[in-house]
Image (cartoon, rainbow, N blue to C red):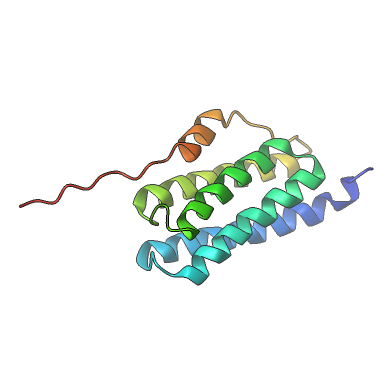
Length: 132
């Protein structure tokens, strides 16, 4: 099925979700325990993943999926939303933005994101040492 007729909608909707993601990440840096914002951030990544997969933009979908997985770990309380998570999410959002710009310019949206995917998938919180 030719999905090219939906490309502009994909670009527009993805950018809306990315804008929301960036705002939510910044907000969560101040209020890390806000469950509603954590859920919203998860849903934005989920939406981008689904749209990208439907459109055949595999790398975009894969990166959004890893971001979604990281946020799921935060949602479930496996890890806390901390600066390391925020940094990875911001890097992921920046890459997604560049990939969507590539799609807009009739590219594939593909990039070498293997390093970022590994960082996101393998993220473990830093152990803070408490000064006596």
